[in-house]
Image 1 (cartoon, helix red, strand yellow):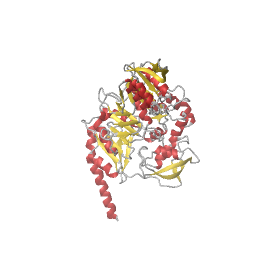
Image 2 (cartoon, helix red, strand yellow):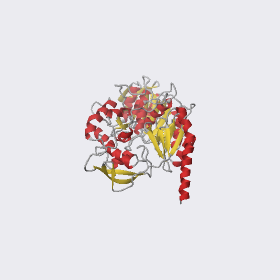
Image 3 (tube, rainbow, N blue to C red):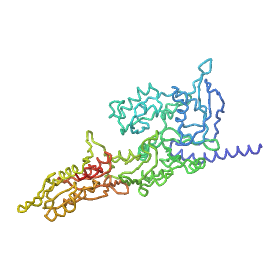
Amino acid sequence: MPIIEQRKGFFLIFIVLLFSWALTPAVAEKGEKTYAISLTKSAGLEQGKIQKVGDKKVLVTPYVVGKGEHLWQILRKKRLLKMGKVGEVLSVLRELNPALGNLDLIHPGQRVLIPLRIVPVAGGEGRRLWTEKKINLEDLKNIKVENYTVQPGDALTRVIEGRYGIPAKKLYGEYLSLVKKLNPNIKNVNVILPGQRIKLPIYSPELVRKPIIPERFQEKKQRPQKEKISPLATGLAQVFSELGMDWIRTGQHFIPLSTGGQINLRAESFPVLNAPTGNRVIVDLYNDLPARVSDLIQSNWDIYRIVHVTAKDDLRSVLTRIFRACAFKDSDGTKHPLQFGGAIRLRITGDWILPVSLASSGKGPTTAVLTLREPYMPAVPWMIQDYLDGLGIKVIDYPAGDSFPEEGESKPDLVKVPDDPLERTEMLLHRLGQKFTRSLDIPVYQSEAAGVKLLIKADFYLKARGANAVIDFSGLGKKMVIFLKEHGFKVLSLHGVKDPLEILTRTLSFLGVPFDPGPHSFLACKRDRSRNIELTLQGISFKDAKGQRILATKALLPEEVIAFLWQNGYEVIGFRSSVGRKKE
C-alpha cells in the first residue's frame, strides 16, 4: 500500500513538471495568461440534510444534471429565482460546489448540491463570504437578446413572466422600460399583434452568469487585453447571436479533469459554443492553445471539440469547421436543400442549413438557413423572410442586407373575384379591354317571305378576332351552336364547366390572348440558385390591357407572398371553384 501511494505521488509530480515545461513558453511569449491548468483536487462539501456555509445553515439536496440543462433552468425549477436573494443563492451554490468554477459549464450526469433554504446562524452576522454585485438591467443592452414572434392571444407581460420569472417590481419598472427602448415600434406594451417580432433581453440567465467575486480576491486591476481583437470574433458573435446559439465569450471556462484537476480558459481568447447537438466547441481565436492541452481536454470529455484559428482563416472557413465540430448532419445547404410541397412548392438553399431551436419556449423557428453574402450580393427580401419565419425557418444573410419594409409602405391585397362565373367573365373582359354586351337578344336568322325570325339570348356578345362572337354559359345546345357557326358566329360554350381556371384559359384562348399555364417559379433574389429560395406556384399568367402581369391562382397565398409577387411585377387574382349555371 505505501508503494502504491508513493507511485501516485511521483506520477502527479511528473505531470506537474511536464505541463510546467510544455506551457510556460506559450505564456511568456504572449505576455498574458489565457489558460491555466491545476492538478490539485478540490475538497468539496459532502452531501447532507443541513450543512454550515460561513455564517449560514443551508438545507441542501443533490441534483443530477440532465441533457441540455443550464443552471438557471435548475434554479427556476426549484423556485430559487423567486426567493429575491439570487446573489446569496449563487454564493452559497458556489461554496457547496467548488468544482463549479463557471456557472455556464455544467455537464449531463454531473452531480450538483442545490441550496433549498438558507438560514443565518443565531448569535451574529458572522463573516460575509462574498460580495454581491448589483445588476442594473441597463447592462443587459450588451447581453444576449431573444427574438420572440407574438402568437395569437399573447400578452407581453405574460410572455415575459412565463419565460424568465421576473419579480413584479423589476418587470413593471426597469425591464419593461428596456423592452420599449429595444423595440421603439411598441408604443403601448399592452398592445401587441400576432406575427409581430419583439426583442426580449434574457433576464434570469444573465443573473446566473453574472460573476460574484470573492471579497478576499477583489482586485481593481483589469486583465490584460489583446492589442488587436480578432475581426473574426465580431463576425462569429453576430452570426451565433442570429442563430440563437449559446456563445460564451466573457469570464473564464473551468474544465474539470478526470484526475481531479481542471483547465481554466479565458473566454476572450477561447470562446465556447454550446451547440444544440450537445457538443461544446472551444474556438481558439489566436491559435494559442497547445496541442497537448487540446488533447487533454478532448481525452477527458467526449462533448468537447476544439477549432484552432490561423491567420489564413476567414469567417467561412472557421464557421465550416465549427459546424462540423457541432456534428450537424447534412448542414451544407448548397448540397442538401430544404424542399417542401403543397400549394407553394419551396426549394431552399444556403451556405448552411442548421436544425437549431431559436425559441426557448418551443415556438418559433427551429431551422436556420445561413448565407454569407459576398459584396454586392442582394439579400433575401423581407417578405420572404417573414413568410419562412412563419413556417419555422429563419433566413439569415450575413452581413444583413437592407431589405426591410419602408415606413408606411402599403401592402397589395389579393384581388378576389366573384363566385358567379358570368360576373367573373365580365371582370376579365373589362381587364382585357374587351368591349361586350351582356344578355343580348341576337337575330341570327330572318325570312320576311316566310315570316320567320330567329332570336337567341347571348350571355355575352362581342367581337373576337374580327368576327361576331358569343360566350355561352346557359346552354344553347349543340344544334343551335352549329347553326350559329354556319351563320358566321364564333361560339365559346362554357355551360357546365366548374373549374374557374379552365373557364379562364378557354376564354383567353377564344379571344386570342397569350397566357402561360404554369407552373411558375420565382427566385427570392438575383443570386445563384445554390444559395437562394425558389417558390413554385400553380396558376395562369397573362397580361391585361395595360400590360400588367396577372397571376390567377386557386391557391390561398399569404400576404407576404402576394407582396413578393407584386414586387416582381405580378398582381395576384384569387379564384375559387364554383358550379356552372343551370339551364333556365
